[in-house]
Image 1 (spheres, rainbow, N blue to C red):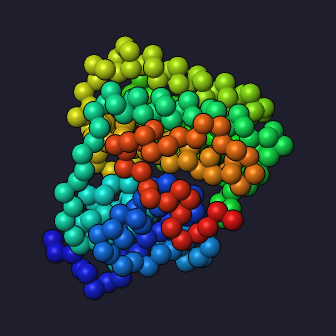
Image 2: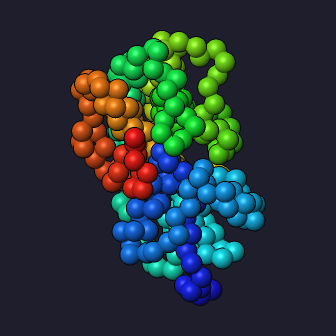
Amino acid sequence: MATDTQTPLKVYWQPGCSSCLKTKEFLIANGMEFDSINVLEDERGFRELEAFGVKLVPIVARGSDWANGAVFRDVARVAGFEWAGHKILPPPDLIERIDGILVGARRFAAQIPEDALDTILPGRPRSYRQLAYHVFNIPDVFLDHVELDAPYTYEALISILPVDMVTKQDLLDYGAAVQSRLKAWWETAGHHTDFSQDGNVYYGDVSLHEVLERTGWHSGQHTRQLMLTLEKLGLSVDRPLGDGAFAGLPMPNNVWDNEATFD
């Protein structure tokens, strides 16, 4: 079916959303112009999304045709251009990247002063504490999916803080537990897993290999944001993660957003 390129292309997003940023940068890199709709500031945003029967971002749409921004094949189809895909790191390398990201995230979360943990991020109703928890929760949701056959849903990745996660040490202990769980899974069932199988996730038709890659860069992008929060607090980041920590992952160019500043 031919794509209608006369109807304006729209991108629905919110600040600090790693997938939203990656989606916008993907379209820009492919020369696409679009109407940018920050759903937290533009009241029409969620009303228009309701017409598609969704309440999540990022969404890319032309008229009534839409796609979840997390699947670039679908985004390219809606936008009206061909996309050949990209090379994905082998699963062992992805596990190594995620492990290194979790080590860094735990180190950075430990630096946030206890009395600053509930500071709200700019333009986004998420605290520093919730941001750190989200970094750890992303691989935890992946592990629940592959180990316990739990549904991989948008709601699971909202990363609502458990009521018993009160102190910073609770947060750090959770991060350590997720890291240990990931290592244990990889050393047993993980490295025997067929990653070509259907990922069976909420955002589209992708392989489990693609879900693992997204687990890596998603946690990685929010870890970069953790480092940014430390800088904004006037703290020197303890052994910051450089480009090597994210090598081979499809990281966004910007850390926070290409339109909204971390201010």
